Image (cartoon, rainbow, N blue to C red; front, side, top):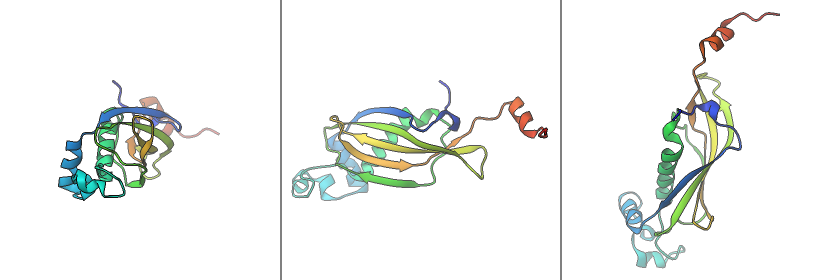
Length: 163
């Protein structure tokens, strides 16, 4: 399989990132370690909250999304990390026993002004439940390596301009 670079992304490009089943056990395990709030740990206590039952932590949802993106998109690219997250919104909770799916949409692409060997691809990543209800959105502009210039392209760039 070929390695994708910055040049391989274009605005409007949509990628299905597969689906994943979320279990009660993983919700409770994640919460016990990283977000020990009642709505993530205890079904009885969770029923008394605004959410009305056990739900995954929003941060757990972000981690699940990251795993899905890595497995379906990022693993085979020149991905170089991201300088931060522009926006994350949790629209509806992820509940135990749900099959969730993810989608990546390219919003824009721009070359780095300071590093000619890389560019930024602004994505909207989304999580949905089985009925296509949007659960979460994440806007981020990861960095990707650019394709190395071929010998002829490098020579063209170095050659003096003719007028």
